Amino acid sequence: MSFCRGLAADLTGVDVAQWRHAGDRIVEPEYAEVKVSASGQTLSCFYEYEAVEPGAMEHATPLLAYATLPYRVRMGDRVLEGRELTAAVKGQQVHWGKAVLDKVQRDLDRAVEAARQGLDEAAR
Image (cartoon, rainbow, N blue to C red; front, top):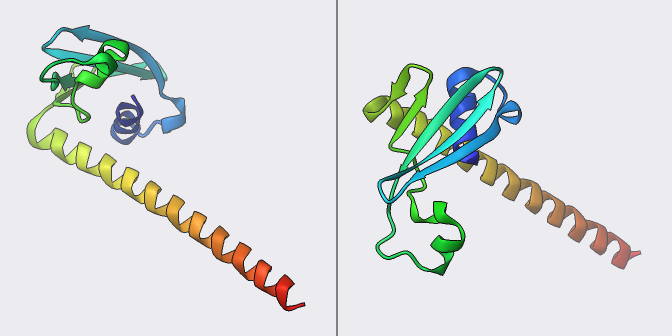
């Protein structure tokens, strides 16, 4: 759902924090649809079924049996597929990757600062 919210924010310019989960629909086993909405708009991400043989985890959390990236996105009458969707997904993956790297950098900065403080205290 988070990835779908991020796509919605990128495609509409509406802040990601405003997008809310609006429901899931699973058409077994063909696809799963994840809906998000904000500011009167609804966006649906469609995910292909990927489980070879569903296990206990997929029975407990059915969406785990589906792909992690959507094969189609629908926003009102607009449908994104093919190159247009690939570009949107790539943009969202870049955002996610940057967010991960930024978090790692912040964590490293905190660890270095804590180590410096520890060395300063030990030196005194």
